[in-house]
Image (cartoon, rainbow, N blue to C red; front, side):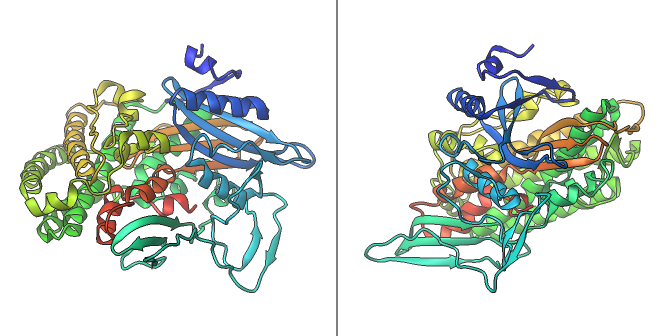
Length: 516
């Protein structure tokens, strides 16, 4: 039965099957908004907001969905929109990050919250003014040129603007940053993302459920294991499939390797942004060694397409598990030595300490999550709070800090590297026997499923709907960057312009993850 906190939401909920606790309900507007108010009052984060076209012929409706993370699990609420008034209550006053999710939903489906005041496009479709790719009756109306994006202007004596992007001097996706500054001090930063709408949400509906894990793993390539696992978790829940213990252990091993690879890369880049090129050279060397062994063990440097429905695509031999174990020992010794160098380097610490600070109160108000949230006093980590197999037996130690500056985010990264190395060694030493994959039978019936994974950046969430034939009606993939990009705008206020690359890298948010 649902716990007291879930009952406080005031809606009748059905527990969905699966490895992670998820409750689902169909509601109308008043209880939908009241449940969101209760969740906010309880201090429970919003996981995601998205829309779906469930119209088939003359039946069904457009639907807006919201998910909230309670201590007991995720609550997923669906609100059907009427044809005469296809709007819904605005949640951005309760959860600021919802504003961007609502803008994306407007672009994808043409539905907006009641009293919507920010009607700017989120997704850049260039010359196409009306393109709602998730509607069954989507209309396309071309215009001759892209309209100017209405950035918020800051006026006053000595205020000037610095535009950065959308094209950057690196192998990254486009994003525009508009700084309003006085001298070198930043008064305001406004981001514009959504330049490369890849059409992932529409493409999911064209794929067979057993094939779509490959697309999920490409939502954000640095989190391919996390997204593929979350998708497979959702699919396995609707199929009533329980994966073997060995498969769960191998997935966790890959997830922790993904976490270590990204932290190693970021620690090097943060050293470089602090004018300490030695750090970049050393961490780049370690990360390259790490990726090469992942290639040998799982067939891909990033372990892409290694998590598949029912388990994993490739078995891990005993000698390879031993090599991974030994690499963890070697990497840990070097990272500990490098941490001592970082901590004792006065020039680096001068750049890190008090730079880009997000106080715990602001982090809670804006919904900062994941690794960056843990550096600002937000002690949330699914591996500890709601552990799924095999994490329920691994006793994960949660990293955390309260200073909320670049130095704190660096410290959390170091702590998480060491903990992931410990977890990988434990997994290698006690890999369960048995198969690494089982078959998954997709039911020819409408069904709902969800997956939640603590990726290296934060919580990755996948909501999956199958239609009456067992085909994908909607697959919504949510990256934690949706919540954290708005916080970056606050973190840079009062800092100098040359510190922005350092602050930005300390969050290292995904452009691709919010541009599907």
